[in-house]
Length: 129
Image: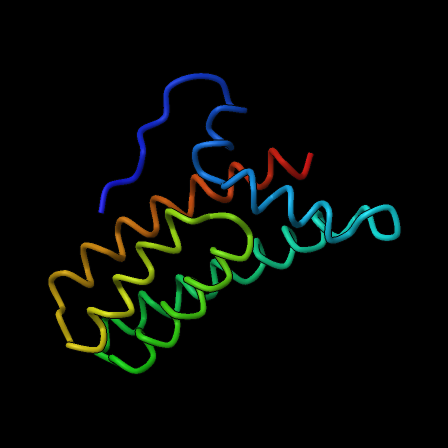
């Protein structure tokens, strides 16, 4: 799976990496009663996503296919919920390939997901600022 290349302003990067519809929905969810909800959700994601990526890396190194499948599933769902749909799609494929123990494809998808997570983290930090 390819991840969109970035060219342009940093705001363009956030829009390419994060789905604006999901972000807007999260803003509306907090509404006037809880305007800090989006920031709170971003903070939770930024704290948790690297842990899931670490689990994926450890699972790949030890051929722990169940851990790999579970960590990819968790990161897939969390990424979709925060609007990182590209990363979610990579994790979905990683989860499926973990079920069939495809080491080579899983390794490649891990590297793609790590690079994509880096872009997602940057976009979320910018959005949070």
